[in-house]
Length: 91
Image (cartoon, rainbow, N blue to C red):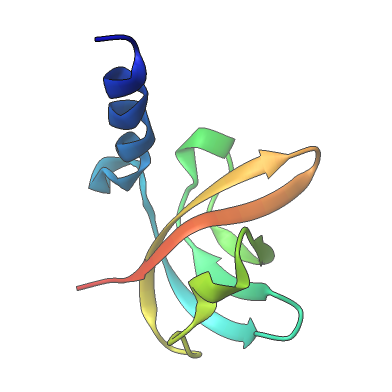
């Protein structure tokens, strides 16, 4: 078949635990679609650990999250805006 199968595999790659960053939720702004995270190093962005605000790619990603929750997430730099593309509660 064509590259369709390969593209699906590539989309699944960010879910790999090695690609996700650990953090702690400091604040959730559901109305603004933003989350404040205290996080470790974000390797794909070459960013050291710090506390900062991220925009959620989709505000529904923030459902069920609250201050104090330990999470794992992926983020991207899109034209200077830092966007959380995946987030889950850490186990």
